[in-house]
Image (cartoon, rainbow, N blue to C red; front, top):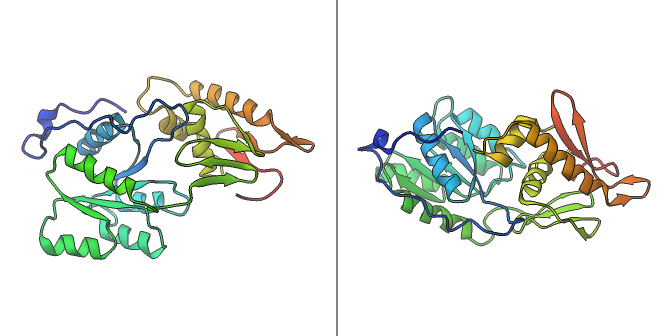
Length: 264
C-alpha cells in the first residue's frame, strides 16, 4: 500500500489525530486484531487503513457492499468491521442485516455521514455495535474500536483448527499433535491465513498482502516463508507421513490440508 495522502487532503472533513501504538506487542507470536474496513472513497480508505496498521492491526479492505458481503461469509476470521453505509452495489445496512441473519456476532462499528438520530437508531436496531458519525477524530475511533475488541465473548471460537493442528487466536500459540511449534510472527500470520481457508488454495498475492502489508518485499518472500513453515510442520509426522500438509498449486497458490480427514 502507498503512503496516505497529505492530511490537508482531508481538511474540513477530518480532525487531525494519530492512532496510538498501544495495541502493538513485542511477542512474536501474538496475533494482531484483524479488521475489515468497508469504505468506497479511496483516499479515506487509504488514510484509515494506514492509521489502523500503524496502531498494530491487520486490515482488509472492501470498496462496495458486494465485496463486503463476500468478505463476511462464514470463516472470515475477522475481529471487527468498520462499515460505511453509503456503498455502491449494496448499501451498508443490507450488508449488516445479512451478517446478523447468518448468526454472525462479529462487532460492527458504523462510520457514516448519516448522523441523524433515526439513522443511528436504525443501524443499532439492525445489529450494529456502535455508531460514529463523520467527521470523527481518529483517537475516538481507536477508543471505540478497542472497546469492541475488549468486549467479552465478542465473536468466535478461541482456536483455529485443522485436524491435529490448532492455533490460539488470542496468543498465536500453535500446537501440532499436542506439541507447541516455535514459529516466527510472520509464520504465525501465514498459517492463520491458511487455516482460515482449509482445503482451498490461497494465492501468493493474498498471503503477501496479509503477512507483509506495506513492506517493500516481492512475492519471493512468500515462497521463502512457506518453505520454512512447511518444514516446521513436516518435522512432526503422524504415522506414515506429515500430520498436515502445505501443498503448492501452480498458478493458484498454497493449500493447507489434513491427510487424515476432509476438514477442520
